[in-house]
Image 1 (spheres, rainbow, N blue to C red):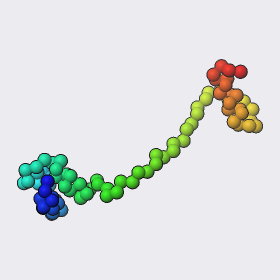
Image 2: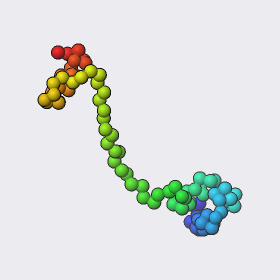
Image 3: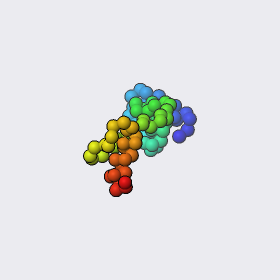
Image 4: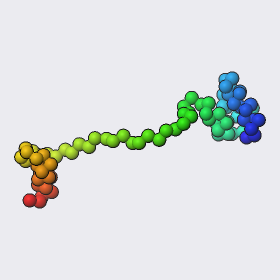
Length: 87
């Protein structure tokens, strides 16, 4: 779409014309109209920030009871070994 036509479409969109009406008026596809007014659409964010994925907690559910009570890491490893059949 030509730059001057783009400005006309953007102005008409801001004045309340629908994308469908602009498509009919200018003889172009809805995709072309959406591209021309993309930053004016309500769901558009000007700058898309890339956020790191949140770290989700991990829960290990092991039936039975954990042996001991002193060193929890050692107790866990012993119990986990029993679940795998190791001694």
